[in-house]
Image (tube, rainbow, N blue to C red):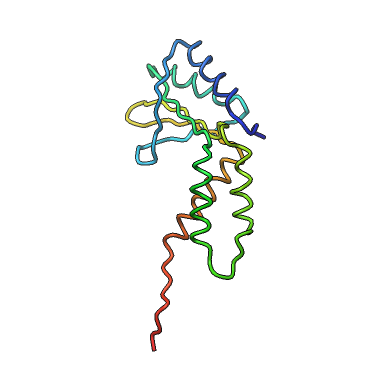
Length: 155
């Protein structure tokens, strides 16, 4: 089980990477890049990942974080309200979940490490439960935005 704030893990990662004589490069690796996701076998799997990067001769490791901002929640709530269907109350579980996220404002919910080797990015990702729920809500909102409702009479 992950803590609800990954800030101390981030600090540990920074120290561990520096301790291996490697540099950090602030950057996020997108899905458009050929990637291999590192599957952790234990809670300190990220250390193995950094050691693999060093063994592969990577001069640096990319690092990205997501800190939940109050504006992120405001936008999510606005989109949920705009896309609610008539007859569905605004006090739905999605709205409750989105409003609950206020408790996590300012916390680090997601970390990504990466290194390039032979044209492929190797990635390590870790996220809190609340960040995963935040992503699920964002995905649900974007999926609902793509639904087209035809109100015209086809008689």
